[in-house]
Length: 436
Ligand code: CP
Ligand code: NVA
Image (tube, rainbow, N blue to C red; front, side, top):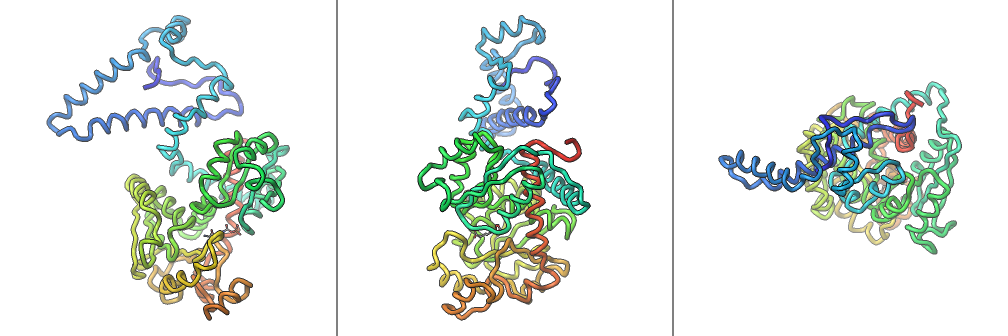
């Protein structure tokens, strides 16, 4: 329960840079937690006893939390004195309130409710589309002049690095590239210490690397926004670009069927499952056995979210699950950071799940082929030539024919990385072209 002294909450005289969204998020989360606690207590009560149980619960809650109820005039000093007597917070300034924002119990609460909603994702996609149109029309919008971002890359990158760097410059910011061969990060200096150092100089930090816990450690220690540029587990900014591309090509996201073929248990498969669950899309992971599907805990969470959004989550070993698909998606079979020894088994297991012309025929006529890239579709790379020598193959997760077909949108998808990453930085640094 939280102190509530009138018949509504009022937010008055917000500072010009403040957004009312944050207090609303906090209040909604607190209410969600209370409703959740109530639901937990009532879930095993038989229907004929429900009404009494609800009355009992309300009575008990009021008694237990009497100290937050005040029926007097909430605008007088009387209530301020009373609140103090009752040991309630009265935090008058942002510096006083911030320690609560980052208190462990509150971080836990926000993590529990996965506070990133369909509406927020839609806002980012809409903002990215607006920023893309502005760029196309030559409109310069650089509201973040004077700010700087740090970009940490413990794994290699073309699209993500270029997107952050170009987007930062477009918005007026400087961008500094750091990797473990040219910085102390992760080698001589811990992630937590690095976060504290970078916070003193930068207004935002991008991280690409290994464990999800590393980017979370950065986020927990930095006081500026931290953006996930890919970990072993997730690649969220890629998904924003993918969804923007889908919207451009297919219209609405809701109700669309996305079949993800191949190694669905890594960053891209996980991220697609989450995106579909949140956005009301139908996700099918198509792979030969359980070991290629996302882990059980994430599956369970996504199934819950899908129930709320009207989407669905399915796992199939049969490529006929591509029938009726709006999007056919695949990714490399051995990801960055995985050992080369994995290739033999992956090629053996996943070759029947290669995206080829026959497989594309099973999807809708209007279906598009998507891939986060880089992709192994011909022998024009050193890696492909090496694999060709070892396994005598010329193309892997997708054939050259599909990659270059009319249905393939892979390069527009790559271009959308920049617009969506720009949207993420603008939104998290508090600027919007309709306002700033
Ligand atoms: N899709 C993607 O993240 O590409 P890069 O590895 O080139 O950044
Ligand atoms: N799964 C791939 C994605 C690359 C963008 C990897 O992690 O290497």
